[in-house]
Length: 279
Image (cartoon, rainbow, N blue to C red; front, top):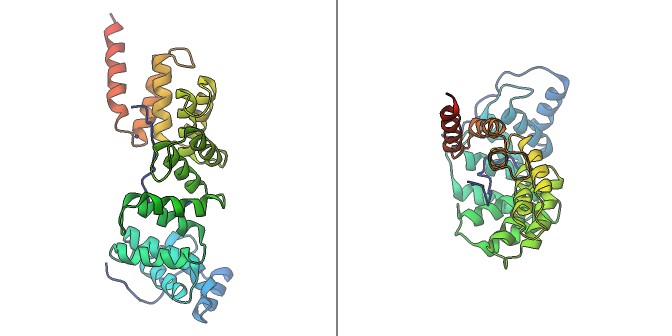
């Protein structure tokens, strides 16, 4: 899965600093860290990338974006594709450096030229939303396919989105279902939710409320707010399950807790109706 902080593209929602180069921060004197540090200091790009990841994640050493940036840059300048992607990530999120879309795109391009899968996906996404480049659905589709055919679930989901929406591809619900299923089978929550929506509506697959419910539950188990909301609507309306206002409210609350502001009004209506029934 990609590590950029991205908006998740979900259709059919039932309701959608200056760079520092200081000395290394104090870190545990573990053998693996010491060995990585030594190899990185000697110019090994793979070790430099690993060291950058240590500082980015703060796992074997205190989190330090400036140090992560430093070591990713050293490796990226030697042509390490993973480091180039991580450096792009730093520019995208503004971690240890001011956000810079031009730098982000440049480093993604270098990594994608080496067939780095996540970078191919990310370039597709930047073309899809028009960040750092002109919005271009055809170019987005080209990069998404490059990553999707290698089994990258995020990209498989986005190919499904393109086929469903008719952006960059001729609209084809059956193809959308095929690609959403690929992502769903890999455990990608957005793909699971979208496959559930196709079963719920009968788009590209036979309408099947039970199958829809199964995929919504799989996504909801990962705290995917859109799926939690949709489950709430199914219990509210008695679609594929017995109508149950209490269960609907429970799912709406989970959706709200996970950021689905659009579930607030549904929850309020249920609570208001419940209050009216109390003598």
